[in-house]
Image (cartoon, rainbow, N blue to C red; front, side, top):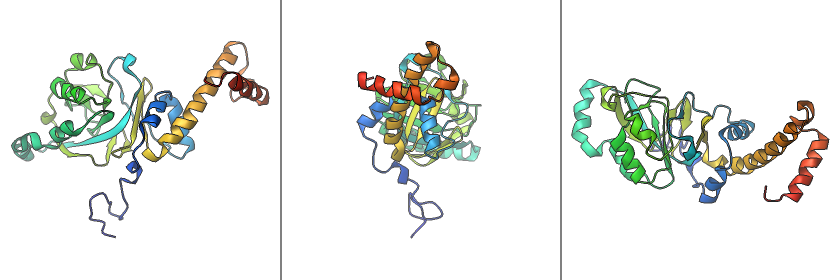
Length: 259
């Protein structure tokens, strides 16, 4: 096997294997009913122990959440001044501009800024273009600039911080639609990004249906248990539920088949 072929790592493995078999729209829609906390639990049980991006929180109005969509990735490197003329000469052919013209409905732009907080990864004009392309949202472990506008633009934006500086003051856009890290989590193009007020988790594409199935069931069970605790049940009996409450839950599900 030729490990130099695009999409293969140094061991000859297909780094895009997770993204093969596109996640269908029905699964993405069902994931809207799964919280980030619940998705984290399901992924942990499935062996994905660190799916949550560290330090990445919503900048935008929580009314626009949850964020759910397929990852489209952009990787920045630290700026090296002798490469800046090449970036400027590339103009709209640079990786950032190329990606921003290729994304579309349901995509989440995931920007790997290496956690740097001394420049913005994008500002109001670029964010406006992404909104016009109907992206589902923007996620970065760096900063955005023009935050007052971006907060009000009407799409979910998750970021580590804000900074007024342009990206070229500290960052160099290097590659798009390749493997990246964001907030310490590996992201492949096609992975599912789920974000709410608890943060952002990365769902490998091949686990999306499982997270939707198991997550919706967990949400339903925990909703039932909250009611029981509100009505006086002890944590000893309710969390986790013992046989009595399990039977009560099963009966409740039969009486309320649609939730």
